[in-house]
Length: 283
Image (cartoon, rainbow, N blue to C red; front, side):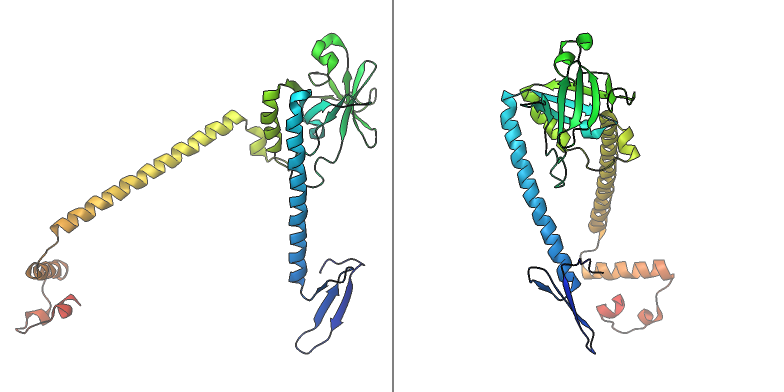
């Protein structure tokens, strides 16, 4: 299957040597082989990714340039990753807005706009497009002045709307100084785009460091073993070269000694009283 939709036109020419399939795109471009169409689609995907990546980098650069003059908060919600990220002050109805385009991997990544607004004594995390409330928390001073002025340091973040769900979300937030914004942004950009495997999910940074140290020690032991074996081989070769004969009579004597050692006696061809070529004796 070529994976064509109704906008394409297909022409099939019957031939004895094999049917010729010609497909024509809506803009008039013609393809004679499926491989041509596959390569064209791959080039189009790469070009779209380059365009999106360039736009993403420009947005991140603008954000870093403006981080010195605005308030930046970091929020991490393990059970609800769509709320995790960096938040800045926003004008208008929303008091905070999640920083968009936190990933350059996909054109749809970061398309959802999350805003944080305050309604009387309650903070609400909602989608800007639909207005649906995703999570909420109390906006009082029982958890401190920082929790009353911003919802990111709260420990009582609830899922859904007020009165509909009592599920509490495990969250962790902090205010970022200007010098910490770059490191926090780099950490979010390095997050995996897909689900983590069990091993990566259960291992913390300290465990990864320990595994890395163990792997480094193992590789260093292997390198030292290879180096020791290489040195042993060098010494053995040097000893053999030192004991090797340097003259022709000594070489012939060494060959005869090897024959006696291997066969127990010399071959009959060597015992005859006739002259032999050195090449004949070697063979």
